[in-house]
Length: 270
Image 1 (cartoon, helix red, strand yellow):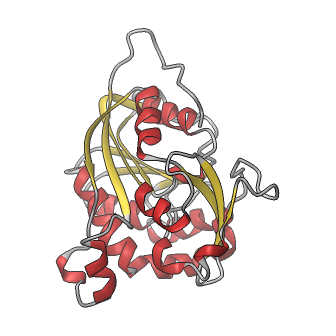
Image 2 (cartoon, rainbow, N blue to C red):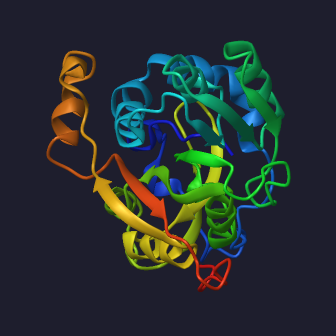
Image 3 (cartoon, rainbow, N blue to C red):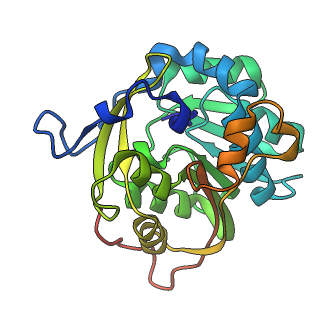
């Protein structure tokens, strides 16, 4: 699983997106490494891209705070843009991604990072309980079918009251683009402007909050990041729109509360 890029500006035909009520679309995303086929193109795009470099990364890094001396897990690390920056800020970084191509890009970009090919749907078998100070899950939760199980694993490896920072597509923006019921949890398929074909989950904010709660997290902060002022001249129309419409991302900082009875069992999967 790799971070999403610019959904609101990338669609060739928003009305052509297929939803899970289409019989041809199964209600799951599955384990296919969707970003493998365009990993290098994505890395070039995300390095300085308007949405990635000027909205998502600043918001997530601000929520992570000072990581000096911390062990940080970069889950679904993509091409290593976060991993490199976290290492530069003094963290010991472990990372994984579902895409082998993305892992190779991370190794090239941040050779000191312990990175491996791994699916978020599987247990983090190489990380002991309570071995991580902070975890990052940037723009990847929507590619996971059993999100509660994946979040429970992140909770397990975090120390008590360790922080998870996650970002996701803004659910209101998803609803504005795709219509239907805002509260319906469903899979959609899209073709973005560069020809990238992707399928992922749409879910209301309530669902994400419930999944975090079920996995043992308490939400500490929730932000709706807008583009940084220095990005105003890059894409003026998008800059203005994202300062008045919730069509970008959400970012959440949650802390791992201890479980008196052990690991949480978790609520509904969707």
